Length: 256
Image (cartoon, rainbow, N blue to C red):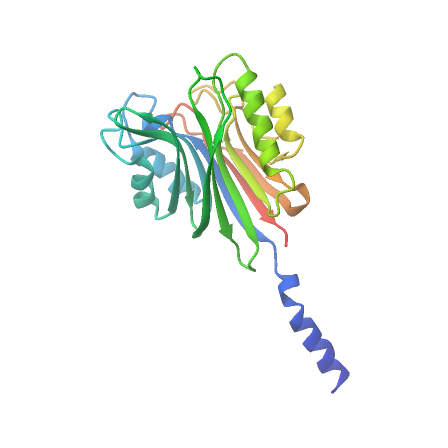
């Protein structure tokens, strides 16, 4: 065989190793059970933010499912209908005849799901992390996590929750994106625990809470392992009405 044809055949056989990086846009948003800063439940306002951002993956916190305050609406299902995305809901607790927890929206089909209860004091509001697994082009897998940590002034629960997340994803066999409302400033101990494993893709982003005049960053998009990702852009979306948090977005490349 001509040696040039041999070289071409070898090149073609190695094609899966030469796939370009996978581009992903990730959004995290605490939606305050759909209640906007004018006191009205307005899921269309949340959907408008998502549609305008056009993300591939969305981590949502404070999601109601068929509760009285949500007027019986399955909020994640409604957002899926408005945005055309796949969903996963991780229930944290029963609430007002329905459920309350975290949610995920995905442009890509979801191949597996998992809900992990995060540790907390028996008198604290229960907290969970919802996890989905996705198959990316080139057959590589990705885990995407929506988490919501404790909101009390005392940090013990958050520290324990951050520690549990680090333990869960240490030595993960796939890349992991963990996004959500950590209820902790960048300098807090619990944030530092997470950063022992994860890299903060949104380190350069500004404050996210409160939405009208934000003074503190509570929302994050974290990556593991660092070498599998390039962060190409990050920003806080200047949305002041739809929720009490501002949405946070990161544009990423996942390297094969």
